[in-house]
Length: 78
Image (cartoon, rainbow, N blue to C red):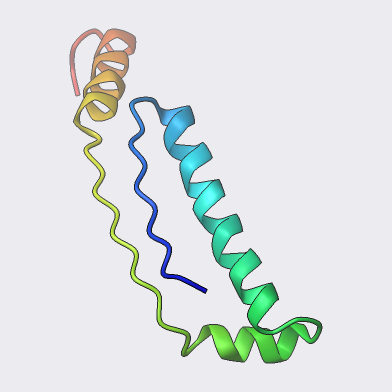
């Protein structure tokens, strides 16, 4: 099997959640192919199988929306 690399970009909270779910499912599918059947053996294998994952998340806009909503509910006082 050749090396597979994936790169996704999300611009909404829903897209980010969908991407995280897809990544999770890809890892699970790979592990099921590597160690079919016995869940305990697969779980042990997951502890040592190499996999590189990098997540960069900028939640500045979400944080600002939360702060704005909080401020509007409490008359601007935090």
